[in-house]
Image 1 (tube, rainbow, N blue to C red):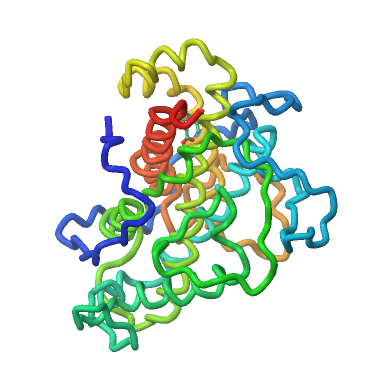
Image 2: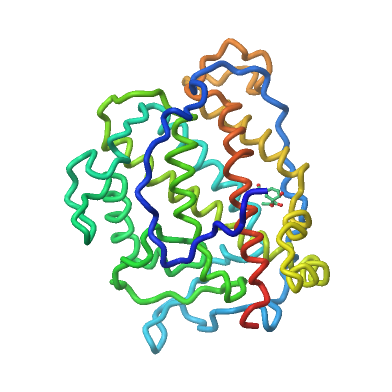
Length: 341
Ligand SMILES: C=C(O[C@@H]1C=C(C(=O)O)C=C[C@H]1O)C(=O)O
C-alpha cells in the first residue's frame, strides 16, 4: 500500500523536482494490442440519492438564496456540481481531460530543462536567491490568475503554492460543501508534482529535447491541475463511502486503522473497469480521426493503428499512479473524518 502518511499539509510547497531519466520506462509510441471491451458501468459504491445533508457532516453549507452578492458581498454556488450525487459524472469527465492532456504532452520530448531550477531563465526567484524552474514559474503565474477569480476557494481545487495566493478581485463564493472540516488540511500536490515529473512523463514522452518549452509547460500546468483535481476528488468519494457505511467506517476511524480503511474503500473490480475504460478512451482519442467516420467505431481489429501514445500505457498509469493516489487521499480524509465534529 502506498503510504497515506506522505500526504502533506496545505501550507507545503512542492520541492524542486528532477527528472529521473534513468528510470525511464519503455517508449510511449506503440500499436493497439487488443484493448479490453468497453464498460459503461460506473463505480461500485452507491451514490446517495438526493440525500438530505446530515447535520454535523455538512461543514460550510451555503444558505444564501440569491446568486447575486449577499449583504457581506458573498455569492453562492447554485450549480450542485459538488453534491455527492454528481461525483461519478465528474470523475468520468475529468478522465477525458486527463487522457487528452497526457496524449497532448506526449507530442513533445521530455524537455528536462523545463523542470530544472534555472534550466530556463525565468523571472522567478526563491527568497534564497535560487531561480525557480520554468514549470514552477508557469504554475505560480497561473495560480495568481485563477486565485484572483476564486479558483482556490472551491473545495475541489488545491493550489500547488497555497501560501502565495492573491486576494480575490470578485466577491467571495460560498459553496455547498459536503465534506468534513478536516478536508481543508489535505493537499498532496507536492507528491503529485513529483509523480508527474518523475514517473508519468518518462513513461509518456520521448527522451531528449525538442525546445518546445512553452507548449510543454502549458500542457504540464493543465495536466497537473487536472490530476490534482481528480486525485483530491478522493475526499468526495470517501465522504460518499462513509455515508453509505457509517458504522463500519467509524469503527476503523476510531482505531485509526489506515490499512483497514484502505481495504474497505477499495473496489478492485471498479478499478479494473476504470483501467479498461481509460485504455479504450485513450485508443479512441489517440487516433487521427478523419472527416469520414469509420464503419466500425469499436476497437477490435485495429492492431495496425499507429497511436500517438500506446493506449495500454495510459491505462497502466491510471492503475499504477492515479488511482493509488486517489485512494491515499481517501484514507487520509477518513482518518480525520471525525475530527472537529
Ligand atoms: C474512486 C473510487 O475508489 C477507489 C479508487 C478508484 C479510482 O481511483 O478510480 C476506483 C475504485 C476504488 O478502489 C471508487 O470506488 O470509485
